[in-house]
Image (cartoon, rainbow, N blue to C red; front, side, top):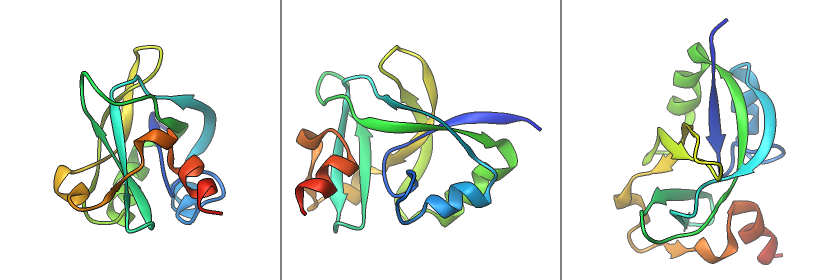
Length: 127
């Protein structure tokens, strides 16, 4: 079975609301990691994050890397909220993997949470 690495930065992460979608697609958790320091993150109505690559600005964002069967990628993407897509994500070590990114329109008028460095840290700050 052919697999690929997928970086997730929000509700697909272990223990969060949509993690069951990863498991149902046959994905296997590999490790915690971070992006390169060129991403910004917004909270979309506190339901899920949207991460955008912004070269020359931004920060490292906490992500989880998952090994996903290629056939499972479409299943995961189709279950994601509108405005989220799979694209290429640059990790801290400079390697490039597939990852979940937000489309710019989704972030308009939403709360930027980049300073927290990730969805889990932002959600923990609200408790």
